[in-house]
Length: 113
Length: 263
Image (tube, rainbow over all chains, first blue to last red; front, side):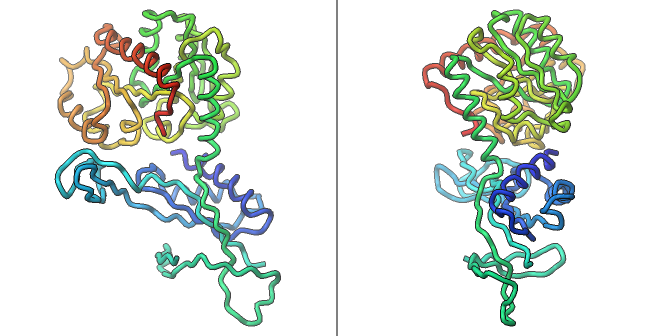
C-alpha cells in the first residue's frame, strides 16, 4: 500500500548514486516480511519515473524468503506461509528472524548510451 | 559473486559484480554487459536517520513518545480521549495523522491535549501512514518544553504504519474484538512491532462470536513478548492496566535514556 512512497525514496537514492548517468535497471532486495507487492512496486516506479531522466528504467525485485534461527538449537527454519515462529528442529519458539526484512537498493545497471 | 535468477519474461542469467569501467560507446565488437554500480543502501535509511533525530529532540526535552497504530475504527481516538481524562492532559501532546479532516484532532483538543494535526492528503500525497519527516514537521508545532508525553496517533491502517519508524520510543496498537481472531496472523508486521496490544471493545464480547483465547494464541505465535491489555474505551474497563503500562514506560524510558523499539 505504501509502494508509491517507497518508489519516491528509491528514486532519491538512484539520483544520488547515478550522478547524472542514464539508468536501465534498479536492483532491489525485498524481504517477504516487508508487505511490498512487487508488481505494484514496478507500476509505481513507472509513475514516479515518468517525465524524469529515469523514465524507461525498470525495477528488478529479488524477493528474499523469511528465515529464522532458533536460539535454543540453532536450527534455521524457513517460513513460507503465516508468520508462525516455531523451530522446525526442536519446536522451540524463541526464534530470531535473520532474513526476510530486507529493503535494499543493491545496484544499478547503467543504460548503454 | 554471481547471482542466478529468473526474470518475468522467462530469461535466466547470472549477474556478476564485475564492472567494466569504459569511457565510450566503442566496445570493439565485444559483447560487454551493462555497467553496474554497487549501491547497497537501505531504502529506509533517510527515514530512519530522521526518526533518530526526532528521538534525540524528544529526549532533549524529556518527552516520551508512543506511536499508536491500528486499523481504521479500532478505537485509537476513543482510547486517547479516555486516557487524557485520567492523566494531566495539558502536559500531553498528540500528533494526529489522518488522510483528511480534523475530526479526531478536534476530539482530542477538546479532551485537553495539545494537538498537532498532519493531514497526509495535504501536501503529503494522501499517504497511508506517517513517516519520520512528517512527524518532525508536526513536532515543530508542539511546545515540547511544556509536555511530558507525545502520542503519535498514526493513520488508521493495519499495514503501512508498521513499516515506518517515526521516532517514537514505544509502539502500541489497538485491535478491537470486532476485527476477527486471525488478524495477528494476517498482519504480523504491526503485531510484531508493537510492545503492547490493546484489545478494545471487550464490552461487545457477549454479542460476538469472537474467541479471545484464540486471538491471544495467534498473537503469541507472532509476538510472544507482547503485553496484552483487554479494555473497553466505552466502559472504561481495563483502562487502569493501560495507564499503568504508560507510567511504567515513562519510568523505564528515562532510566534507559531511551531506545528505539524499532532497533
